[in-house]
Length: 183
Image 1 (tube, rainbow, N blue to C red):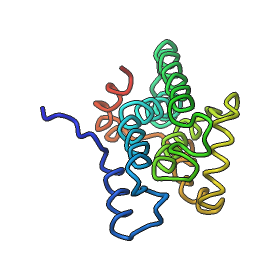
Image 2 (tube, rainbow, N blue to C red):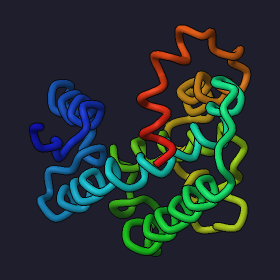
Image 3 (cartoon, one colour):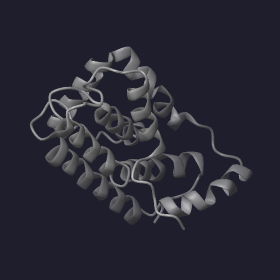
Image 4 (spheres, helix red, strand yellow):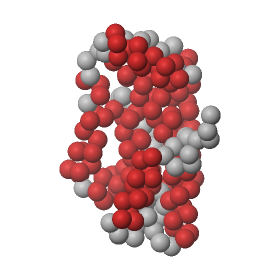
């Protein structure tokens, strides 16, 4: 088995696009210290926040609704506890007392983070309810990209709860993923 890449494909594509289209500097700063803060978040998120957000969405919504599979309560409780730890780390380590994850301006780190966070939101988790700092950050991200674009970008994931149950063939194809996400 080859080692896991340090940057996810979607992050690599975002970074490519920032370079190809010479986007405004705040998205992926040229300043090395500012860029290092973005890179630090991007390196952390795909093995921590992404994993816990994805597991939460699958265990809370897609297993029971789409696959008709019951998730053991202790498994879901463990997943939700891990999500809570990741959210706390997101606030304490990355957001701190800043407007955005890497400083005073929105960056690709914020786009990647909000995308991941919308997964548990789509499953009915109000992850912003008892986290005023995170809720205020979300509002700033939404304002920075524009409410319409924000809603459009998350429309598909927010409709996942409306998926019809999977047929038998789909359930069989998804069985290996399901086992992985229940660990």
